[in-house]
Length: 347
Image (cartoon, rainbow, N blue to C red):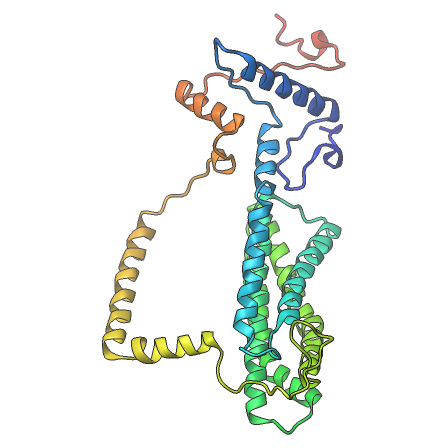
C-alpha cells in the first residue's frame, strides 16, 4: 500500500481502486484483451471484470451525460430570464441572469479549492453539489429582485445607490438567515461517522458560504450596473443601442406573477380549493407515515453502474450463477520471496 499514489492512478470522481501504477496498467491491458475476446468470439460469451472496473465505469458514467447537464443549465438560464424580465426591450435581464449562474460556478470551484487545500476528500456523491448550490444561488437572486421591485414602488425619487442599499437592507436579512441556517445544518451533518457524507457536508457548507459572499458582492455589483443601463435607456440585448424614445420600467407584474396571482385568487383561496389542499395534505401525510414505517436501508454497487456496460453484465451474471459468491482466491505477484513470506502455509 505504501507504493500507491492516487495522484497517478486516481480519477476525478474519487472511485478509483488502491493500486500501484504497474498494476493499473496491467489491468487496463487485461480489460482491453477481454473486450477483444468478447467481441470476436462467436462460440461463447465472455464476462469479465478487474479491480479498476468500478472506478472506470462509474467515473465515465458521471461525465458521459455532460450534454444533458449543459442543456439543463441553459434551461435554468432561460427560466431565470423569464422570471426576472418584463415584456419590454429595457427590462430584459440577460446579464444578471448569467452572472447569477456564474456566481454559483465560482462558489463551486472555490469550495473545491479550499476543501482540497484543507485535505477534505472528494468522492462520487459530490457530483450532486452543483445542483444544490444552483438552487440556493437562484433563490437569492429572486429575493434581491423582489426587494428591488418593492423599493422602487415606494421610493421612486431616491438615487440609485440609495435604492440599491435599501434593497440589500431588506434582502440581506433573508439571504443571511437562509445561508446561515443552511451552513449550520450542513455542519451538523458533518459530525457524522460516515466519511463520504461528512466530506459532502463540509464541501456543501463552504459552497453555501461562498454563494452568499459572491451574491452580496459580485452579483449585486453587476445588478447595479444593469440598473444603470436601464436608467440610460439602453437595450436589454444590444447594450450599445440607446433607444430614442424613453422606455419606462413596467409597473405591471410579470407574466409569472400574474399567473400565480390568478391561480391563488381563483383556485387556492376559494372554499373548494382550500378543502382540496387540506384533503391532499392529510392523504399525503398518511402515505408518508406508512412509507417511513416500511423504509429499508441498503446499498448496492450496481446502482452506480449503467446498464449495458461490461461490468454491469458481469455483476448480473455473477449474482445469477454465484449468489453465495463462493470462496475468494488471490494471486500474489511481485518481487518477494514467496517461500519466506508464506512459510506457514507451504506445509
